Image (cartoon, rainbow, N blue to C red; front, side, top):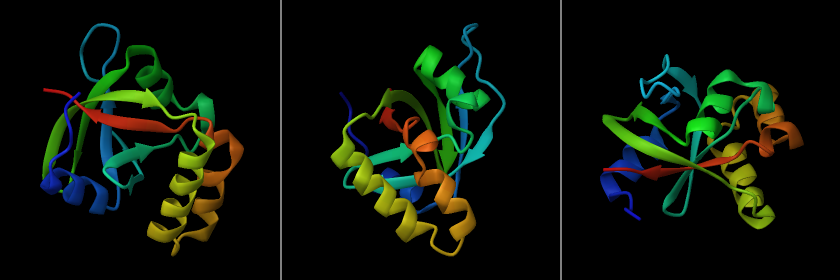
Amino acid sequence: MREWTDDELDGIGGAEEIEISPLRHSGRPGRPVPVWVVRVGDDLYVRSWRGRGGGWYRTALATGEGRIRAGGVEKQVGFVEEKDPAINDRIDAAYHEKYSRYPAYVRPMIAPEARATTLRLVPRP
């Protein structure tokens, strides 16, 4: 499995939000949707603010692949569900730290509904 470069981690992880375009079943990318992204160590994570009902999330889960753009980086990615409670606790803390100036929006991002949609972004060639 490929790893992120330092420049990619800094660019994507440091961006306020990313544009995420999960691939549709046809193989074509969906419409880009802005979502928050957090970095934990050398991994990048996203969650659906709308929980499992989010359209981009359902497509990402179904196809497992897509494209992201942020911080001067455009990349093909895979989406991997993150179920580890310890990692999710660290992701919650990362959302608090990065987006603390938006407390009304952070609360739903760390609520059980959104936490259940945590996806790790994995770089693809």
